[in-house]
Length: 385
Image 1 (cartoon, rainbow, N blue to C red):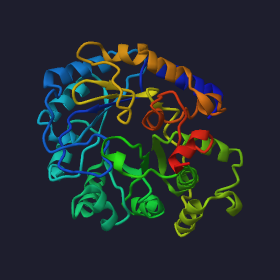
Image 2 (image 1 turned 45 degrees about the vertical axis):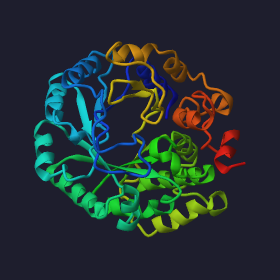
Image 3 (image 1 turned 135 degrees about the vertical axis):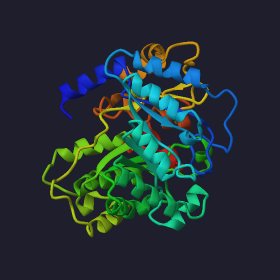
């Protein structure tokens, strides 16, 4: 990314986030093994009321600078009976919207059509395995893989801009090339890869090793040549890898001697795919990270730098979201690049910035090194060294 463009983007993120994620509820019919939210069947006490939800929407609409995109998530946002009312109000306030529902019996063609009629155009759902055995075991529901593929087809037919989210962990890392192939077959062109952080139920799931994370990032750079826009969550080092690879624009993949075992395996599978005639796409994520262009509002109004960083910064019931985002000392430190250790010294700290959530989960220090990055000495903590 050109330095002037990066500077303008980061300055804009000082005034307002690019994305506001609202965890509308903890209620969800699924019991995913890696769930950040530890979602459950029933809503928890203290969930924002309809009136409080409208107040949150007002606060977002009143933020200085470019209007953020509001993403209704959960739990399962479809579990809220007032979702249509809240979407209608957000549209009246001029907000751009996205929804991230769970694939359950609530996600019917009729519901999808109604949401589209209300003006929702962007939707994301999760797919964490290349086949039923893998995906269903993670989601805890037999037949969920087939339901997910059917949901993707419905969304595409209705006209949604569809994004698929995949949480990568040790148990599914070797399936990524097959997942990419499946997405292409399903007509999906936006893929957001979440690098697992050990929070919620995800504490009991193994993250990928730092070397594998590096290999995955190189694979994801390659994936952009296959008509796929790639984004990452809690994997900002993808942007570092992408910038490093851009220094040799004629190389469409890593040489074998520079690649790790996982990359070589994923690349060999990718070589059976037909690249896009249009060439590589760029990452659509521009220097966002926990508290930097992104903010998360919990089901009860508690504000967090991200959904993976369970550290409260305040509550929208007592302080406007815009004030919390622009003035909280932790967030201003993150956005100013006041990081510690290797992350603070890295030449890519403004483009990447490391995962603040992973640093906190692994070391208890929000501003510390991201242990999933090979450029930091603390990456050895993920290897048990």
